[in-house]
Length: 187
Image 1: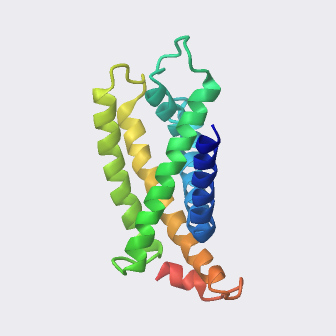
Image 2: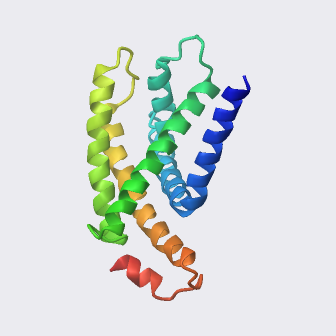
């Protein structure tokens, strides 16, 4: 029992260390994922169609896609969707970071839109395949959902590039006010 507790504490400390060393990446990923999620929520409200990524993802992963009664509550569905959605957001921000760090692209408007578009096209392919293979797929307007998902990923990429640029300047000890940071983002 103590050995099991020790392993859990050790794992938690490792995760905390990774977070502490990469907190500006995690915060940037969370911000970008928040804006993407907000966009999908707004589209869902305006169109009166289910487009909320967290709910759709949570229902797919828990296999509760048609509001049937079962083991999973709406809170569990949302928690599952949120954890997976934000974990993927952090993973992709880390991939963006590697691309920016190795100068494959720049963390500017063009780079953010390009990575977001690429990411969005990959996402619709994955979502399309997953929903077609799922034994109980959600009843949503797939075409509209997938098109808006690409737009949401462009928003993610743009916010990620902007916040990455801003936080990079802050983490390097530069002034919070940098009159050229906006120009660097647009270049």
